[in-house]
Image 1 (spheres, one colour):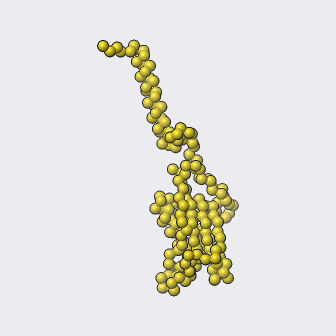
Image 2 (tube, helix red, strand yellow):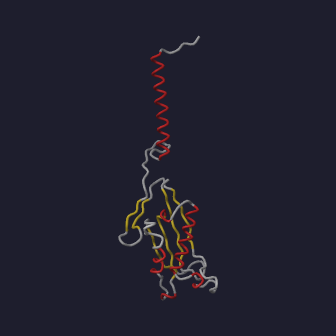
Image 3 (cartoon, rainbow, N blue to C red):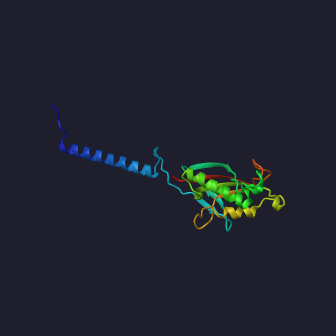
Length: 187
């Protein structure tokens, strides 16, 4: 013979189980939204923040919050711009501006393969070889003319932190530009 609990106890138990189920559902929703981690530690979904560098089209600093997805792209060099020019010549790859645009388009494609955009770039390292057409000095203005087509525009206002260096040479003759980037997104 089984005994049923008194009606008052059954109601209390039903309320308790209902509250427990509701708590579990809310915890799952909050965890999925990223407000609480599965370990129960509270975490706020923080955005990536950029500190402007005045009128210059870079960020002075970029802060990437914990938990963001970070992607490191290896240095990329330009594609051949003029296949009729002598192989391995600057003319075959183009001037610094042409090479910069070529490299940034390659980076844009590589980021797209990772479901990222140029707006997700948080850090950039630009390596420029001294250009014989500029007395062996890097063509910073040429690099900037290509760079500003991709960053700090009305369509893509985000600007990465960036370093630009003149180097003695790159992997192949004729190359004037190599760029590597770090991109991040908050899930």
